[in-house]
Image 1 (cartoon, one colour):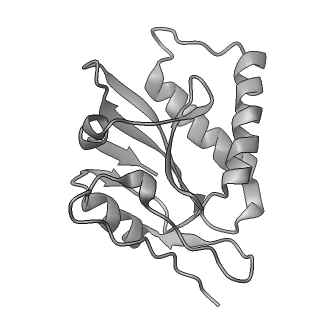
Image 2 (cartoon, helix red, strand yellow; image 1 turned 90 degrees about the vertical axis):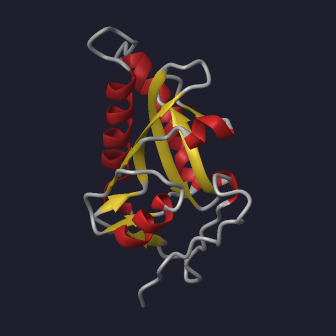
Length: 166
């Protein structure tokens, strides 16, 4: 039986309160997912355009798996001596993180893709930056791939998001 993930309705007064968004888990323990159409609809409600979705459905990430992958990713960065350089900056880190997560997750989900993508926004400091975004069983999380950790964005930073790619 197909399980479609429903995103909880946004509070009218808190359209950017992404942390409070929750995703339902499949009752039988199977991998929960969201379709590209559902994902696109919910992000465009935040006013984000473009939202680039290249697959038809996306596996919702289990937070436990994400935490394990973040530890793996930290070691991967250390072992490969990844650090910021003029030719290897934030968008490269974000793309690498998303690609490595997909490869690491492998066939666990049976979906075409997993719900980890790249997000571009303006930091409170005024600098433009790229990080990762993950749709998890605990809600939407932002990830700083240069530090292999979950980060919080301010409301102004959430409102400044101008590009998302899954």
